[in-house]
Length: 300
Ligand code: GRG
Image (cartoon, rainbow, N blue to C red):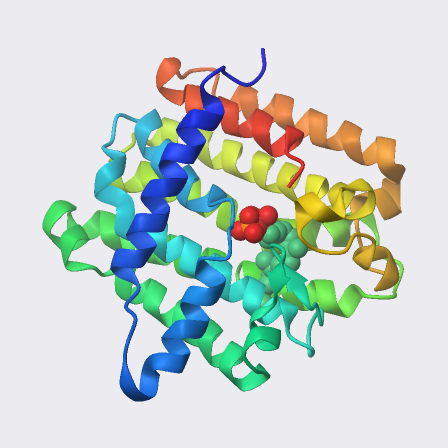
């Protein structure tokens, strides 16, 4: 098994849907707020892979839901992801000048604007999660579960806690358990929540929800391991940022702890486990299966 022949065609199609959704759901304001929305759109439209929003669609599809109805949710999650990248790049955090081949938000604008663009993307995400189109389409109890899921994954039970742990670990020796905590919270939580968001709104039965949750955790961890590997051996032009920055910053990574081959081995094992989580699904989960392969094989 491996990637389906039409995977990249499907991926590109969904990426276009996300891009159109972001143009529609994130306003461009004029007047005194124009600089703020310019900075938000600058980072939103800088060429991300749209993995998380596409997982929202794929998660819904795997349980018979209609992905098109989830566009505000998909866009909300991409807003949260983009905010995290903008803030992560700030001088107070990773202090990176390039992302996705372009100057980072604080370089293209200024630090204060980048902080505010991130803040506005995060808050706007929750406005989108309460969008009227969702209110009309889904029962309130599913929406409440969605809000709990996303706020936990993005905040102190998820990404922000992981980022804090990551920063605290810089330059220090970390145990495999500490590294797992960082990956689990910083990266895997939002990826897992993306898959589950689609499934919850589509009304998945509990067993399928659990399977998709397992799948989400596994590919979330694999994604971060591959990210660490690419930072070591990836191609700068393809990545659109300098490689070797984790080493320079003495970051806690899988290759640092287990070596390059050990990290690859762990990622491959996670891929197998992710696919196993989908064993009770039929062809409706093929796109999720493809995404799992893609997470491992990606060069960007
Ligand atoms: C600032 C609260 C806060 C959190 C930051 C996500 C994160 C936490 C930091 C980003 C740094 C980083 C390299 C994390 C590793 C995994 C990751 C999120 C990579 C970037 O995601 P991609 O590859 O990005 O999906 P694109 O550009 O494709 O959207």
